[in-house]
Image 1 (cartoon, rainbow, N blue to C red):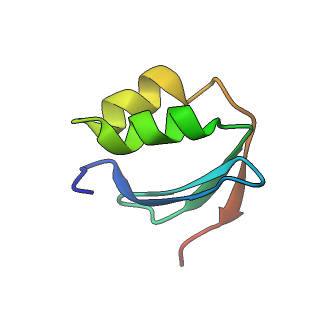
Image 2: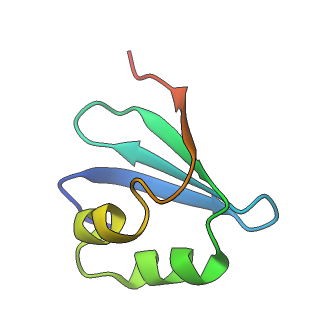
Image 3: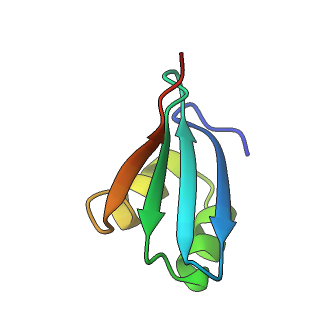
Length: 69
């Protein structure tokens, strides 16, 4: 998943939680209530950062889970 903004992602379909690790901070945020369809579209997106900004950021509740040292 090459992206200049997003290092990696993972998704828990049972909890509907999307975890996103950001570049360059390395911080991990969890986004709650993300549908499997939204995650699938995110994975297919040519630009992960643009998709994230348009369809995830400010649309779902989130929390900082892990601050990189």
